[in-house]
Image (cartoon, rainbow, N blue to C red; front, side, top):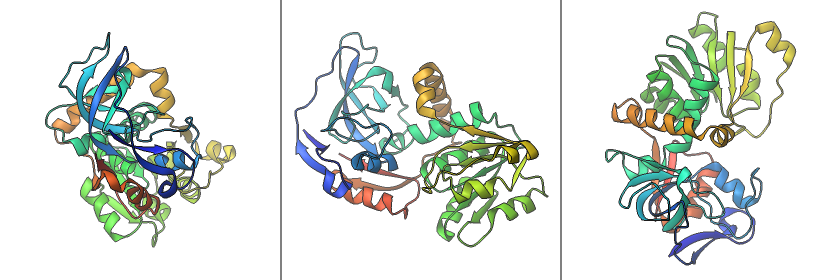
Length: 326
């Protein structure tokens, strides 16, 4: 079978090699999945560079989110042949391959109504946003939710889940096209951070009260400005640092304005409480079938164009999720 293999760390265009490798057999507690679609993530690039917090041994195959069909099951596995699933194969045996063997604790069933591309694009972003909004922030109906990078994978999920929860959603994005996408996703106001001061607009839209919950996957200057427009007893969610700089959180400012800075590490939550992740998956599948959420897919790429797709993702010119078809 074909798989993308990283034998030496570097830029994806140099580190990734399309190679013929043996088709895996499922061990006890594993299932063999025929991969139908793979969603790309920014951390795939960091893993190729050796700059991600988790560094798999070389050689490894990246790819953290797949959808596909179970074609064989190992001893004691509870899934059945023919089931449609999403999975997050742990490295070094990632999902950028035609077939992958995955421990069943990283596999989740999906309904027939969910397309392969949408299924692959859904798991990590919607799980992260669901965990952040419902468990970390305790988002309530009628509260104001400010979502940064609203046209991105996790941002677009947060907008839809916020609307589904009955919140008033304000989003930021860079450029007219991405701002329009945020509005189409359900944001009542969308702000172009390239030309507008989102902190001032949020205060204006909320009549000076500010946002109750701020969903920030950007960090840096965006985090700094977010502290200017957070409401009394607000919750500022630290999702990630796509902007590059890790901002400081002055505790005196949090005290004076009476807000919380909340870290969101969904991966740790998953390791500690896998049963809660399974419950959230069920809730998300129900929301999808109700039409309340739908993954935003930018484009589908042929399997041979993974390096080019990652280059496009690195340039931050895309929106939603990029999907690869083996």
